[in-house]
Length: 387
Image (cartoon, rainbow, N blue to C red; front, top):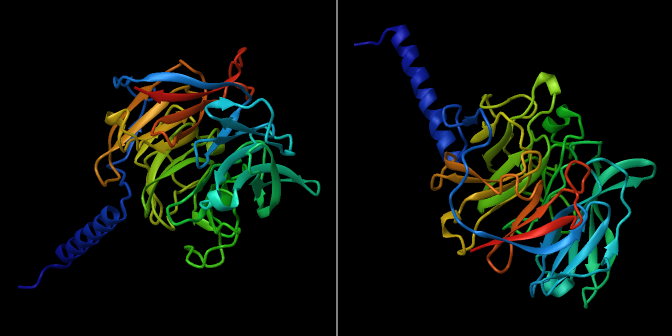
């Protein structure tokens, strides 16, 4: 018996929908039905107990931390200083002073140690600078002295990243593949995010020498992920999967809020400026969770320690305007959010960097001296969360 044309068409649609669903599940990306829209506030207060310890104070907008073999750490201050945390104490003199452009959200931002730092003592910074009369963001490689007291510029490994008053990105991380990943912003040009040949509005993937890896998604392009507005927060769930936390719009095309957390893989397009909130569009990633009230995100890390076992595998996100630490727990090996909750609500002000330390504890920096917070006598802090 032959099926009627309407029935046949319906069967084809169902088959295509099922195929698309299987592709979405296989890729670990959310669907509009899975996307959680938090319509009011940012979630309930969490109940997991922990202590907050002040590790260092007296900083000015500490933006990034790079842990070194042996437990020392380099800390960037946005006005252009690289500081040393040695034996748990902040050293009074900067390791280096970096010239920075006078930009609202720019300056000395992300930092990451070379994977072979123990041998070559090299590290990388993301900095907004004046390049021949034009402000740009670039990635520089530096060499730390043997006693960790001073550092010298080796060379610029990648430049020409657009800079603007807002949306400068800036986070640096080495991935499990040994490549350098850099989160950039759209520099107030949303359409840049969809152009794979423009480094703005992307997650870039580079070799430690600043070259474009041959196996990048688009040949000859440093772009690993596209469709990003202002990326300062990402971490790896596994070798092939990232949690990406992006800033939502602040007035573009009359849209606001909706900072978002997405699960992404090589070559994914996160949809900026096309999709918003839990919307969907073919070939673009719908977020797993989005917040109608702007947070916005500073940094993020997956909790890998044992001191707070309830957080194991959760994504912890520092937030700026909303002044809290957001915990997002995903269902196992899934793009679906199982739980989200708020910690440190209005207790330490604006939170910027979030990362795991070599001691298995979570470290968080405040960002209260950036002109948008309350910079008290202790200035900005480095906090350690432990039990």
